[in-house]
Length: 219
Image (cartoon, rainbow, N blue to C red; front, side, top):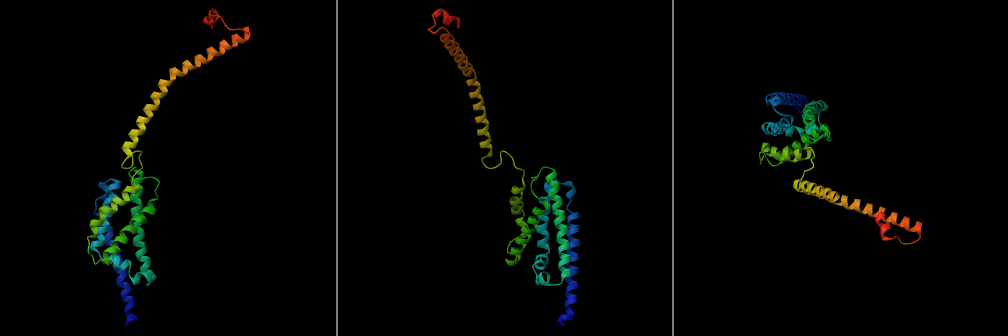
């Protein structure tokens, strides 16, 4: 009986994956992402992703099930196609935010899309193990904050003491400029003094005697 039931169970799981993928695409199209900025789209999709899993608790169960891990290759391939499609979608959102200057340009969009999916999957796994003791969708802000802080473009004033540091650098630059401006006349005087001493030394050596007051005035 178990042998004959296995193909039927496989078909049920394949149908489940197809249904989940269809619902996922339908829900994404209904988010109105086209009216949002690239960064807002990304934040909206993160919140949606957690809500979707919470409303479809069978998804994480299937992801971590024995049937998927060691079962039929066709089921793994079907699930992998769904995950790869969502990965490509997230990669596009991150790339668009980069082009808009809302996310650092030095990060790899696909790698960070993978990081985002892994973060959500890990949270979903903990949600299952806890017996749904917390609201999965309520964790969206924590994920957004953690990821966005690493994704934001770097600025001179970044960090809690950035403004104070920038002000200090600006003040220091002005003070140095003032010192240079103040030292400029003194430097000219010193240069003239050196020229004068050199001329006196030259004339003394030529005369081989001290210069008179009249001769010093001529110098």
